[in-house]
Amino acid sequence: MTIRAGRPAVRALQPSLIRKLANAGIGRTDIIPLWFGEPDKPTPEFIRQAAKDAIDEGQTFYQPSRGIVELRSALADYTNRLYRASVTPDNIVVTPSGMTAVSLALQCIVADGDAVVIPSPVWPNLAGAAEILGAEVVRVSIRPHDGAWSLDLDELFAACPAHAGALAINSPNNPTGWMLEDDEQQRILDFCRERDIWLIADEVYNRIVYDRDRAPSFLDKVTEDDKYLIINSFSKSWAMTGWRLGWLTAPLPLIETLGTVSEFNFSCVFAPIQIAGITALQGGDAFIRASAARYRAALEAVKCAFGELPRVTFPVPQAAFYAFFAVDGVCDSFAFAEQVLRECGVGLAPGAAFGPQGEGYLRLCFASEVSLLERALDQMRPLLV
Ligand SMILES: Cc1ncc(COP(=O)(O)O)c(C=O)c1O
Image (cartoon, rainbow, N blue to C red; front, side, top):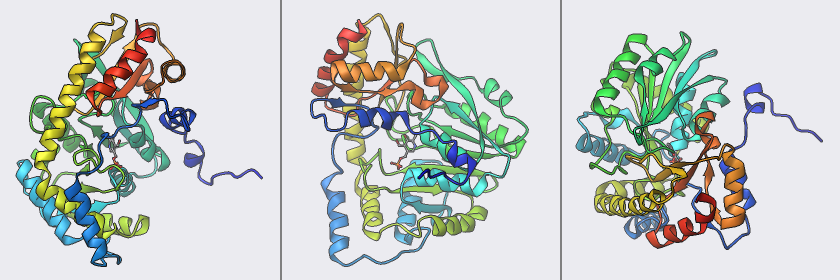
């Protein structure tokens, strides 16, 4: 029997190249997996305990579709503490993951025939979530320049077609570690205001930054009159990838729609997970600082190893925990990642997974112990010299 998906946009979707490669490694216990984007350590114990207590108390019932008020209040406090913002609990919608927050945001604002403009390379799910809705994805290149990644804002603005409905920006960026500065964010916001288009900002790596405490955020700049949707997640900052907990910050006029769309997508998030989120927000700052220090040491180890390899070009990331690097002579990143897996026993993500702009690159997640990274880099060396 041939089963055909109904909507053309769904039929046209391509599977993730990262998953495709990782499937080739299933069952192998001898590989060092650096292909997925997650910390190597489990969630801190005090956060896990909060969820266990809530389960033991019997908090197993349906919850409000926009999230429990205690978590929305804790998120508003966290936001106002971290940024020059004054959001209220009513500006916030709790979601079962950053991924779902992206989907909800796009479901609420993408109209038929809209284009969504996305600086790339980028986390594949951002573009995929727009494509599922039938949006045309327009990619604008983030390029290496003088050893770092950068985006030419004039090029970005020029690439926004008349039918653009939204600009979707992931900064700090997965996979490059590129990060927008405050003045650049202000120019982008001014452009969205002028063109009357939505700004979707995916800021899930905002606490994993190497030269300051947190990344510049659109939350420092937007007002209630702006068309903005800001996505965040507990996955990266608090090592909670498997829990599936995220949130959206949005202007009040959109909140009711977001609540309705949440209801028809997932109804609500499990209460013990939301309670774990409150605990993370209230007691997790030391964990965030310690993680940033670990990732900084890991980045130094990667820089040091790649620095000795003239065939490797490695624009240094400002944020997030990925090394996105090119190897002289490598044009087919999937084939090369397969070779690295087969011959070196190291799992990397092929750059092509992040859009055509990523072809020729490989992504290595360095959120691991330095000793493990050094072993992986050593094993890869024969293919990099
Ligand atoms: C840029 C970006 N946004 C959002 C997410 C989603 O995070 P989650 O769905 O785990 O909350 C990820 C995960 O890798 C990501 O890299």
